[in-house]
Image (cartoon, rainbow, N blue to C red; front, side, top):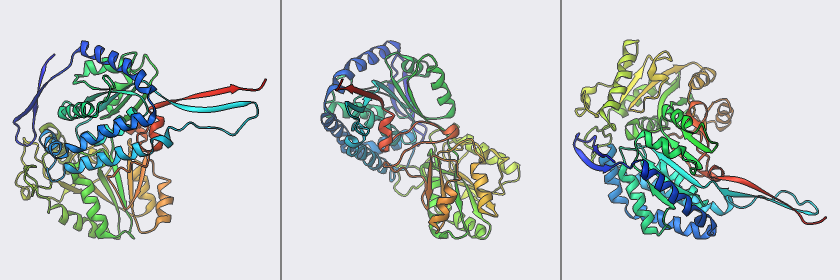
Length: 462
């Protein structure tokens, strides 16, 4: 075991220490989860729903303390972090509400002399590997449906947000979940690989980088289990000439810079029809300048630091490279006094005169920067939106629903928005295409990915 120190991005000080689990801990945890899953899955669905409802209640009841912990661990303004638990509750309650219908047995048409049906059978032991940027919103997507469906769950959370895992563990105790049904592990990469390779782990759900997803796949080469991967994104928006300009600007600025741009479905590139391009850019820049970058504990702050200095430096490099290649930065960093080289505090930036030869328009930034390009037509916008190795969400800004439907069919994405962005509806499948990954969480379809189908074929007449 080894002690790990969490450095808060707020002021670079030591915030929390915890001990990593070792190989023996992994083996013991998996054995306990495997043993517990049998009795857990044999409970009625209504019993499991009651347990998980209390589990969710316990998280929500600690909302205020959790909000402050999120801020100190990853830097999001305290004025915004309570919203994460609101979103957590919305998703959890929805998945609990639809559980009975989603997990109900499927019965094909009647066939004389036979009884036939298909049941949803839990996978067994599921490992959930969650990131720091939305530590509850990403983890709840898999944890709640997995537990409700009858699986036991082992959570390995980001090394930056270990207190999230501890809060989940506390909630499991408060809810009275049977021993072994929900457990946590604090692991390094080597022991994470050991966990997912364990023969008794029957499913893996990972949210993180493409490189992390590749590592997960490599660790699973010797066995065949369900694997959900939500990976990178470079989510685009297209603002048509008929768009409501003020509404589009307000929502796209927020979609670009909320959480310092550290959102898997945040807006990272915008294409605007030439007829409204100048008005859009001017309005976008004016609104961006109204952000207040500073200490996230201050209630006046609307933009906090990025999670680490190294992350901020990566975005700074993208911006500088784009400018060297002919791009133009429209935000004067000196306007944001807290923005400083060598720290996690980074001013929001708007770039024009950009193209797809620049990394800032093709590689995930995961920070407060957005590139805006002028386009001549719908066809050009769609071509540019699809010119990406990622595909999580895409948004169209228009007053014409028919056109949005037609254009939406042409866009390579997991979710298509009209006049909305950077949002996850728990009633819809959360999924992606291309290097964004594979698998589904949430919606009724999400339950299919924490279970496998078992067919019953009974001949009752001879």
